Image 1 (cartoon, helix red, strand yellow):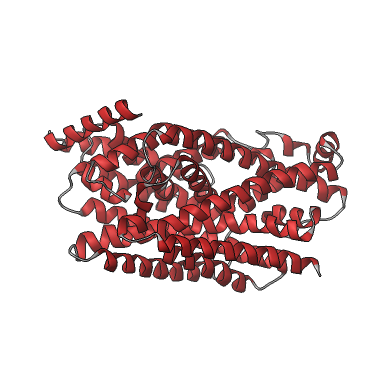
Image 2: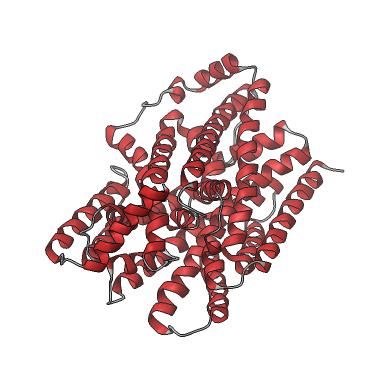
Length: 493
């Protein structure tokens, strides 16, 4: 049996497992809360691995190793910023958001939480939130589909568009039918595959390149600055990289996991699992790129596409079947994020736009059906954007990440920690942050100087605070919910 056949068998088994989990979750989904939030029944392990797998995407196994391979450890500032940001997100947002979303009208989406928390009767805040989610997630989903197409092209030499269709088809299937539970359960399996693959490739790879000292020497022979954390970096460049961590506070597909926790007590356990997984996975991604530099130097060859360094090393190092499982790790990263983003986009379309504005008296069965149709529609649009294969994964992800971080991040923090934020403040802050990212992110001279999330986050925060102070009026219901949340946190946290 050929090596490619072994790998293909591993990929087929993985795909079949994802479809089976989707079918299992479909059997457990009976209403809209189940479909969008899993009935708030996730335990700490599922929450932590699901949040991590949903967060990292193909960027972890393709985008980050590719950047390190080209530029060296100076690119690892992004990983450092993300680790700090993820930790703060678990500490500052997870417990409060879990309690507050239940206290405030048992909200099941971020836009519905903002509307209920701020008692916005105009529906403008909810609609604006839903539109922002639709815009940026369509780009984000397309980046995952690009990664899926590249995966099949580099692994099997198959047509990019064929790979895009295969990956998209499977992930659409289990998301469409299984909803949030399918997404969360598949994320756990995918998170574990990614974790072990990212540790095994560099550990075994170091032995092949002659050990730690020999590997280091080979990297220095290519370019000694590759091992320098600040080589070629400006202060603004390092700030831009670390600023990726700011994005965590506003990523709907990540913070929705906090809302789905079984209880606030489980947030601490989930945080330890999630941060441990993230630190080791990021370390593995960086180490994989460095081992790849040494390997290609020692063998006098070059890598055609730097973003495939993890895929190619896995194929070189391991038996074809094990290499197939390594390949499945890339698919796991890609598919876990696509599915998480699709379910949040679906909820924005149904819960925050259709249900809130057009038809409020439908049945759960109708809304679940519409949620599935929303998954299909967004997937088709994202596939159309991904079809040309003319942008890097990291560039698409960075734009969408900044969009969410700058639009929602400051608003989520203010709603959780400041009584006086108003609906008008949240709305104008959110819009200002989104517009700043869209403008800044499309002007090369600006993006080359500073990552758009920094000005977007700051402007959103300033506008939200200034407008809130100008429009604040005491509201007994808001004050009571804020007080109830603090008391529940003190009691159960």
